[in-house]
Length: 422
Length: 165
Ligand code: SF4
Image 1: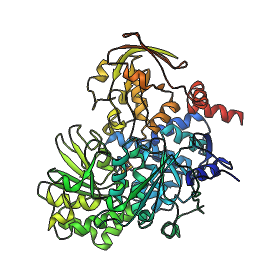
Image 2: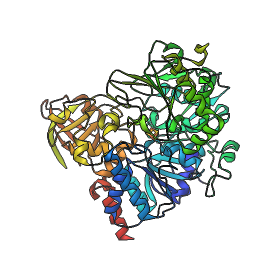
Image 3: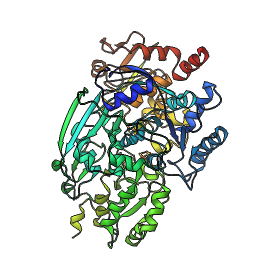
Image 4: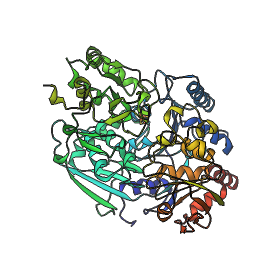
């Protein structure tokens, strides 16, 4: 009998061809998917050429998503995207997403069925941890790791310790998945789960849909985590059915598995939360942040750019108008979200309110393009990072919230709650 | 590997967005990245850093994005080694993979100030502050990581492995 293991340890053991693994152990795993984007792929492609295998290990298991500076911002970014495009063509990469079918990678790949439960996935993008929401082990790496992964289909890992977040109880009205994860990061800090696998369980998590679960796993990296993971249940199965391209495997933590730490969180303690500059852990209740006047609101990104997020924001903004001092930029994370928003009338709600609605892109989330802040400007964003200069000038500020608070703030002209709209 | 240079010391949670701001990520040219290294944190860094200098920081150095542009920018700016109390996971991995020497040494970080002359022996894990005369020990690398560094990074190690197969 192998030792009792967590879900993460079981997935890693299976992919390393081992019966059991323990935290701290160095292993090499077979990969199910290697991902890179228009920023990280050019370096990965350069390193890949040095390895000398000539072709990727499996053209169906490499995903290349030009999403950061696309549609291209300038000549330099066009050159980067061109490198990726030509590599994808030359290698016959099946999961290459050109403008027109592109989306923000971490919203796109689950939606398109490219990732599934039990997979081991590396991505040259730190928010690769998002796919843990489907019960996969997924972690962000650098371009060199991605290059070697593309060449060999393998990667080295140190088996992480696991930390468990047991969240129980009903969320208060107006509190969503983003508040849950901001609450956790506020609690443990930006290195509170350094090198660790964050496992989220409890009936609060079970009550969330896939969009909310992805929001939570997406920000595991903001607590320093190696990965975030939520075990498969009927919600996950319903999502993957008729969507996920390959057969999936379900793993579950043994009841006597070892955790470095277990946090018990009462959902009733979580309130609508905002992370102040310049760290995602710098959290405060939204109710105590009403004096912060803002210039811009961004609703989108791999954290909160899914249809459910757009619907949440639209419900708040419907019939209202954006404050005259504020620019509201709405960026559906994928073409599918964009299309669904048009069909269900969400796009009209945003346009009627005076918002700009963009084609999918990471854009302002990383300070790339499509909504850069000037010195002294403040933005509320549904994104995941608020570091110095993240969305533009080093003297600008980013406040992180969920979609409903972001929408309310756009109308109010300052940070605030939907109920403040009267 | 032995290095000697002046120390540049910063605080905790130095994230990859200040190491190399995203507005420069439309390029992957090492010289161009190096020209903007740490500019949002310390605009004078690039003009004062000399080849061989040592970057010193507190906890969680390199947190945030997975961009390998960060270790590339640091290395090509002339920094020989980064000494921190702790490193963010992806940065640690990227540094090992790309061959940027890093050392985890909390005592050394407390005992080094900007401008101090520091000599470092990466293999021995020794850090000497020439200015104060104090010496420190870094946590030794696990054998696997040592093997990676000796091989010249992950790409070289992979090439060797592929030749063996
Ligand atoms: S939306 Fe933002 S955080 Fe997500 S992948 Fe794009 S740049 Fe990174």
